[in-house]
Image (tube, rainbow, N blue to C red; front, side, top):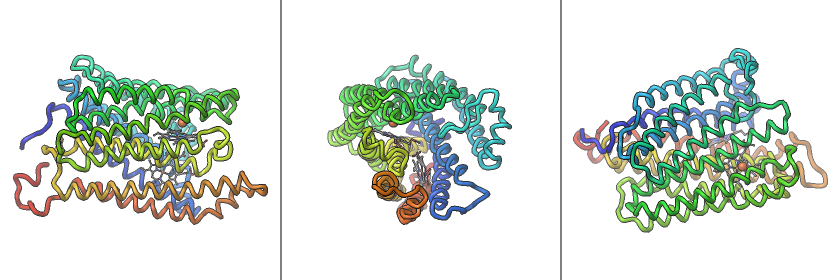
Length: 469
Ligand code: HEM
Ligand code: HEM
Ligand SMILES: [Fe+2]
């Protein structure tokens, strides 16, 4: 079998990508359960209560994205650094540690009541549980730190002892920031204002700060590979995008400080700086389309190019447009914590981080399976899955936005505001439609997985080309 990998240790990424896709399937299964519970309140009760399903849905999302980022790093860093990974064995070991820790945590959520899980894992020694996205038992959080440190050491040593490129330095900075910000998950003050304040250091400074660096560097790597455009051009874009992300995103954290107790000046700082956050996302669109228009080659991997363009557009729509919609304090005063927030959360997470991970998987997976691109049938299926998932996510977002606008109006804006649950009943139709779109999303995901196994009908039987493992 011929291999198209430049460095052997890049193939470790395959493990990480397979785990990522597996957990992605779990995330979406729980998403559709949640969506159904929105309209049939006691569906699966008491076996899987809504709060548990929600925790599983969001935690799986974060964990599979982290698997995806790590896989991306293990794939692209050796190639950029022009050397093998510093310690391939450590990367393999940490894969299993992370997978087992993740699986045990999810099982813990599903099998044991949350309060009992807290007791079992001795949360009272160092209480960190009970906050959205950071529900993991303290022991899991410590595991995450160990995995992150080993990972950073491995990637850092590879980068520092090899060829240094802008792509790897930006990626390393992003990954370092990701680990540093996570440390705030261990700070759990009794004062609720402080608690919320620092909770956003993890949540906001991840997705609107350091993760943007990871996104931009993976995007730059894939664009260099599929377009053949000079690295120097791509690096200039990368510098500006990174600078703009940090300038707007750091102080932009203030858009979460409007109503939780910090000083009132945050309404100004938060509004002004976060209103500029769409700029780097818009630049990413210009960047991707510009590079693809200036391409020097037609890369045979069409889905990878499609995912890259899709990421730029959808990240801008979900983060930039849907983010801007509710980021000014006078607007957020009414929309805070409504379905508008959920609409934005879905499209932004999908458009930016789900799609960039699927982009690098799309580019790297064929190479790790010994070919530059998949057979035409597999590519066609993958592009079908792109459209099924992306269009249904657009619909999920639109239905939730409609629900959110009505909710905001009926519950908070009219002269005769209605109670929360009364309003929920009135907008149930949109939750039904969201559920339908969610099922289509799941079908898109099944088609995606199928594309990995599809043999080319025209070459079936021709074992030399069609079925490299
Ligand atoms: C890809 C990047 C982004 C992702 C993944 C993302 C994700 C999220 C999520 C999940 C939430 C809900 C958090 C919670 O309360 O549980 C949220 C809230 C929020 N996001 Fe983003 N976001 C992104 C970018 C942006 C941008 C660029 C803006 C502004 C232009 C923005 C503005 C907001 C605002 C104002 C809220 C608070 C909503 C409320 O008050 O309920 N986001 N975001
Ligand atoms: C890759 C696709 C998806 C991503 C990235 C995603 C992301 C998220 C995020 C970030 C949250 C927390 C929202 C917030 O705090 O504002 C959430 C909650 C939720 N998601 Fe998803 N999700 C996806 C797919 C789905 C699907 C297909 C469905 C089902 C139809 C679904 C249904 C839900 C529900 C019902 C909640 C709970 C909302 C609430 O608490 O009111 N999600 N999801
Ligand atoms: Fe934010």
